[in-house]
Image (cartoon, rainbow, N blue to C red; front, side, top):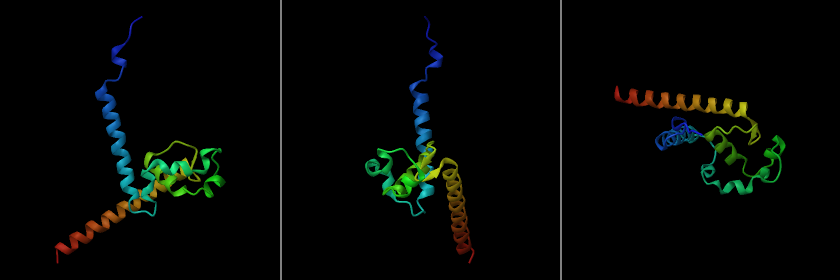
Length: 121
């Protein structure tokens, strides 16, 4: 039996994947900063209050969940693959995040324009 050592990821390769995932999550978290979603999603203890902890996830169950906003924020940041999170389908979450990115870009463009106009007065 031979082992193909080239097929085993090196620690450096794994580390690069972890850093890339972390950077992507932080970028996505920055997009959420200007929303009404709570920062408490970063503390995973909210999951103890999740309505789906002991039941199958449904849109209705999410609607009545006390931590729906934390769940939504976490799902948007990590791009969670679950069919339903926080009462939204994966496609709905992707659409919402795309809207948030567009809004963040518009705010950024506006603030840059404001800074530029102040300097030219």
